[in-house]
Length: 220
Image (cartoon, rainbow, N blue to C red):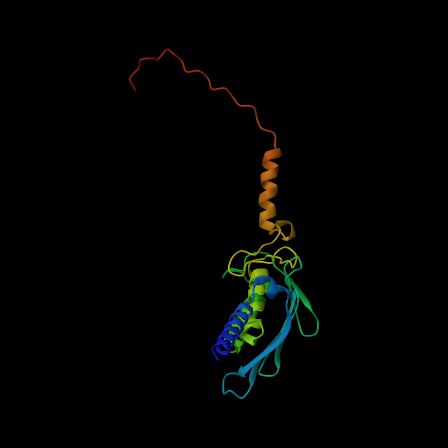
């Protein structure tokens, strides 16, 4: 009887630690995963319509579809492993929006506008209402959280990810080769200016004229 109880306890412990080990996904599992998920909730003002967000992921490619009040529909396709950093937006005709720099509060470009919209709908219609734990990629919450992390690294931080170089650190700085990044115009300008300065001929140094000794001892 005691042997049977011991085996049962060991089995339970094994199942517990096995399920715990697979509940939290790492960055490469997130990047290499493929899934689809959909979250909906009653929208304002009277709760008569549904706000729906659908996210499909195939390795590096993330597709986001959003519907509000049935007739307000948007679609985005984002390849987080492709340079330059850009968003493909549109339900019918596709518009390509390239990242030109940091999207701070003063930025008014179309890329930054759509970036803010994507972040808002993922947070407000996805992360808040999705079921499950964010650490479990088999749940709706985990899949949306995985997509959210990838999009923040790619769109917000401007880092092109890779499935072959160790991925990225979800809680730190993504691992990405600098050569894969598109330099900002301001960065290129700074580099060219520096290069021009280094290449410019330097005027010969002018020796200082020795001070006259006629006023030595004068009290100034």
